[in-house]
Image (cartoon, rainbow, N blue to C red; front, side, top):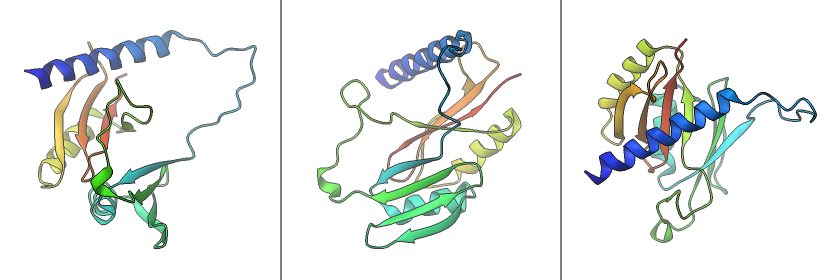
Length: 163
């Protein structure tokens, strides 16, 4: 019951945030310095399993690695992700958006509702991925989304925008 309440709260917040964002016009009095996201860095507990998830499951390619860091640099030609291993997995704490500053989740766009459904079916075959919820409407729609946890526990949302 608590999990459903938390998920409903998250869905409500996402609906509110997308509604607010959609209604805000760019500030024409301030120069827009940012052109987009260049890359994202994720700390992971299991570097190899997380790399396999992004490459073998989602289709990213390895751009390079740094064994002394240790890290992998991945891309799908639209977004670049750096994965690096946490230094001490025994000291890690799960992220709590109410009490921690940091990344709550990564949202990756999917081109259509059909592709989102196909991805969900594909992810259900992966034993080391937790699906928090299957594709569903975001608020009243028409956008649909789903949420998973990759092998190291990072939350990833997949979202298909409705037209």
